[in-house]
Length: 183
Picture 1 (cartoon, rainbow, N blue to C red):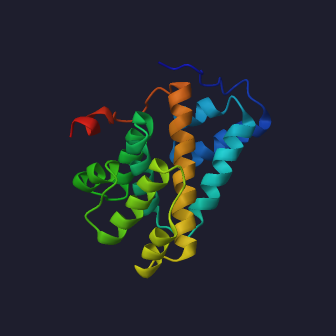
Picture 2: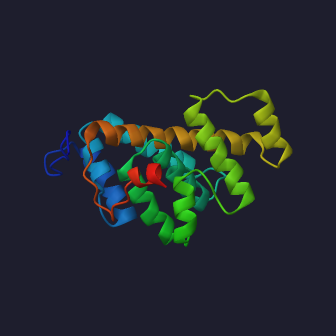
């Protein structure tokens, strides 16, 4: 149940209207999460700013979606699981891989290592051992990639927790993370 309402786009500030317009131009719609964040232009601006900065990073759009799916699964965020399953499908990630990603796994060995790191960051509250970081480095991950995996994880934890608090109504085909517990 939506606990923080979406905004009436006709009553928001010019700054917020501009941000909502940019989202609509990019996505063809304003998702409920964005319309709910728009209650605070600072919150919406922070989210869009970090999202934009990470979108210009070295990680592929596909891996960023896979990180988002792992975070959604770890944090049992149905809204994010739904959004990122839909977007992942648009990026040609097949249904089996999407389901694995929600469980923090991948059929691709390198992606699997990245998603394992995402799960470890969440489970260990950011405490990652020196040995674990060296293992990643020895397997071809540079510090730039490691930091972007971390930053994308944090961005997705922000949205996961935001949706938990706000009770954001899902406006994509629904994916229930409770199914992950049973599987």
